Length: 99
Image: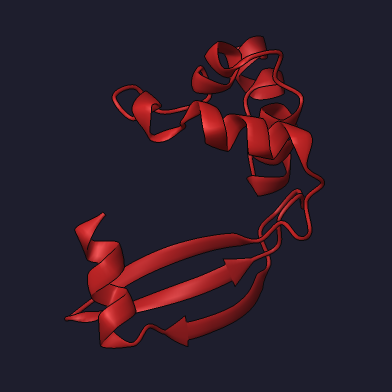
């Protein structure tokens, strides 16, 4: 319980920090949901660890009755705060649905 609470990322800011400071790609892949580890390539890992971040944003997608909404929330805060809500255009909705 202690490990899960203190050593797993709880938001986008913590996730970035853990990825950026990972010793190697094997450690970084431990942060990824089982079965999705191959989505982080060696090239992506090197880029993340060797380049400063410009901005960290945190988004959530909701699907309602054939419409999708993206909600931007505050990264790195104890409780999420909504920064903006936008309905996705159909082409972006389809893109995310295909993931």
